[in-house]
Image (cartoon, rainbow, N blue to C red; front, side):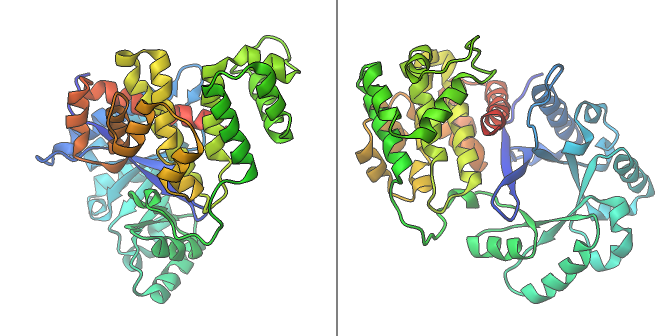
Amino acid sequence: MHQTNFIVREPLLDPKQRVVGYELCWQQSSSGAASTLEALESLVGFVAGQVVDQDDGWLLRDKTLFLEAVPAMLSTDALYALPPERTVLSIKAAELANPDTLAAVQGLRAGNVGVLLREADLTRIGNRLPSIASYVEVRFSGADVATQARTYAGLKQTSVGMIARPVSNWADFDACAALGLNAFVGKLHLTPRPSTDSKGLNPAQTIIMQLMQMVRQNADIAQLEAVLKRDVTLSYKLLRFINSAGFGAGREVQSLRQALTLLGYQPLYRWLTLLLATASTSGYSPVLLETAVVRGRLAELLAQSALGKSEAENVFVAGMFSLLDRLLGIPMQDVLANIQLSDDVVAALLTRSGKYGPYLALAEACELNSDLVASLAATLKLSPLDVNKAHLSALAWAQNVAA
């Protein structure tokens, strides 16, 4: 399938800042053709082909996908490839004035496919809402919260989920959370949240940083083992990781030394990178962590064919670390003062330059619905199809890491 457009994603957060779903769409081109029937059908077909596996089923695990719909595509065959309980089509309420469209929507609901109603006049639809929609989009404005709260309280008694948009600052997000609303947050999750917590590294992070330093300097296994032994949780996690089905050691590994030997330095460094981000406590936000994992993996996949597998591992580290300042609540310069990284990784982190920077910049642009996606991809000689496949693959990989 020839693709000329790029997929961008927007996270849907629950009141605890956990990612419960993603809205995927084609990046709006200047011609505005991203919402034509053909474009929307090709998106559904492509996504189904990438995130539904014959053996493993739904690769996005507990995430729900939101996809824009126009009336003509409500009966598209591609929809049958997606799990109905994890698929939500969003459609404008005005379209339901057409009896055929209304019947198609009710048919989808009967088959358990989700429907998100946009631009709905809640007072007019009233009690019919649950038979038509599983979600309703509410325009959240921080202005008249009391009136909004009364409307939403009525809806809370029904099976219909409420989703707020736009939510452009953390105060509005908190107000939505207090009202029990999920929210599409655009790029809000990438803006630092005012935090009252203490900044800096906690003890777990300090030990992980020390280990990463030692791995970079090729310290011998006995030294690494001595440091690991000081943190029982860390030792437990390493053994659990080595003995997980995914790693396939073949037999139960019980000693740290054996685990370190089996793992090797590069994979150990990568594992510590993931761990450092998850050991964060300040202003901790699950969405930020998931974004870091997706970003790291996407940047790595984008770099693989040009740079090779082991160089691409460094791009993964750069991608993960690019959000570490926000995850730890300290400036990037302080993060870099605490850990020794290669010049290429530092250049990527500080100015998105050097050998790895452009791959990190492209992975970031996919989150921001930025106009830079196409030009960055072209510079790196990556086609829209390459980027889109890597994007969905990174999303699926991040769900496995979380699990």
